[in-house]
Length: 200
Length: 375
Image: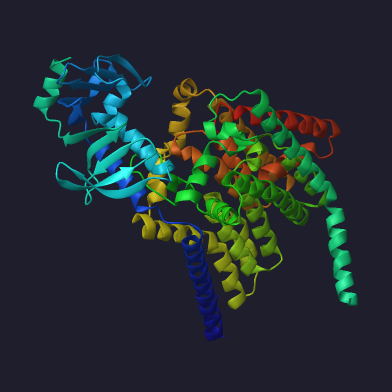
């Protein structure tokens, strides 16, 4: 009697487990067949955005009208305001505030201050844009390119190209409106933070 | 033609004719939503609607999360750590959009089509379920109130809510009729569209235990656990594609939803700040309280305990993320709410009329609100 009850219990449990496993397998197969995997270009773009999220200081170089212009972009707090400041070696200057997102002051030697911030690799301007494009731009393409003699990957969005390391997706350069810049993400040290805030 | 075939055809025709009134109420409710959306396209307000949504007549109905579902359908999942990204959205609805897109439909058109048809099926299924559990009179009123439900504009959006409600009602119906394999499939389908389907396990459990021990009860218990299996499958899929089985949870955090045991306390404590940030949260608070009241009315009217507890979990659990935002929408997936509302209108013609008129007005107003706020 007890044995029969035991067998029925075991049969109940085994059937339930089989049912659960079958449902899980069918669902996994359904998702595998029903959804596409993200393209390598979108994945690289998302990884590049993560790099930009991690840094607050970027140095850049851009060739404007045959002259090499160096820039430094710092993102952080300025008193009670938060935003980014890009300083260029030719005297150019752009200040951008996060809330409301707007350029508050500029003396950049390019027509559009926002373009200058993106070419300068300003992380809090470029990062959200790349992250948005990674998520919503299905037309992003990835191709091999060269930057200062280095082999890099070029992420081609609709109006912006981002040059990244082929292995780590670290952003290395920006191509915007026909102007190419190289960018280098830098660790913010106590000394460099003090320097940035002193220069304001 | 054989006599059996003729008999079946007559049965089907009789079934369709007997449910024609449901189609009428569904059409009336959807006409309110679609006409309001079309009027907004022509006359405004457009406020926060994006460029994509402004281009088409019913574009506002494909806005907000509709854009994210479309992105998943187009590109697949992509997790962006620390940022709002699409693994926060469950996969079945985008998979459906993708399948229909493969047949030549645009993503938005496919989404709106699935939602309208899914909602008709949901009303028919909930009517049938209510008739089995609470009787024909309450079933009729439940179907009518569901068709006009104030937050029901969401059922016409490119959101999965309509197919999920349909799946929940059909799961329970299949279980009540002893069709456990169908119940398992439907419960899994619903869970792949929205996690709230997990709570259908509560009303299923007592039905499963009514089955005789052995294989039959095993299948019944397996069907009851099917939503959890589906959730596990989603986690496995995320692991295989994004190398992060918890990508859904990580993405939810970036959307401001981090579940903690004291989240509900935080939701109340932070309410003044939440109202200051976005006053529309008052709407969700009002619906939160209304839903709890309706669940109590449903319980008193005789709704099975499993359904009222499941409804309470659907309404209360999101507040454990520390916010009331979207509670009005989440509650749509609790059938017991509609039973509570139907019970209020039962035996009271004036209340019944007032509910219908107020619902229709609020349904139109809710559609207009899409220009300003996410549902």
